[in-house]
Length: 121
Image (cartoon, rainbow, N blue to C red):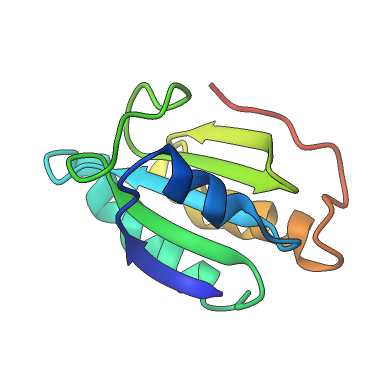
């Protein structure tokens, strides 16, 4: 668990990652995305506070296309193999840290969201 840059080679690898009782946060980024240059280090910084949450950064150039990812950065949050939330971007720069921190906190206690998780698209 913890934070890692990862490569998911195929659907089987993806399913294997989701086979955990811990929340799984998948941040999809692109090397050519200016917003990703800010989102990646922010995500890693906040994820480091929650080592029991599986947090992966996936470069879209090295990972098969995911149907829920239509742009970068996109954060997908899974619990028990089920997609719980999707954040397409982290919003205005000045609000990003609070949004990411709040999102992690929802899953921090028992692995279950502590308030209604709403998808931002």
